Length: 203
Image (cartoon, rainbow, N blue to C red; front, side, top):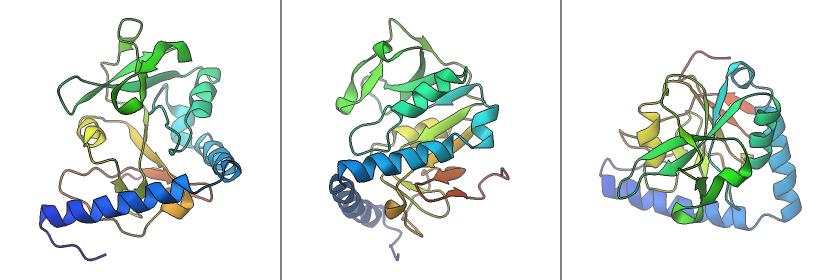
């Protein structure tokens, strides 16, 4: 895909791509989504990085996203800690908090379920762990098409652990437009395959 260096051009292209991938996901039947979610979850749980980590950082999925609720429950069953994000008021930053049950969540920013601050402990050590990164699309190099707010790119700039994108195979592109502040993930897990992006030498 040819995109000029002008940031306005990149924003316009990304906006068009977001609309297309959102429509593609909305158009999936419930059965299709359930089957693909199950395949992605199964592949994710085979990752060496998952087996060796003590904390899984993950988004709490919305309807059009790859479901993370089964992964959260599996992580608890495997004795791991689970941390989920909460947007910081009046900023484009987010903090992660440990949750121990689904009742630790409440509806927060953008209709996303977030940890209840008064019940949860904020994560202070961001040097390790495995972070599941949301995206409407990912490309072969691990760059993603997010929702345009920049929360995860800011977080990933200070996260030192492994990162993985979960995505439906029909939403993968060979190359996506990206800017200087966009952060690529180390691995992509789809309903059909696992791809290492080469950002880290981790197999």
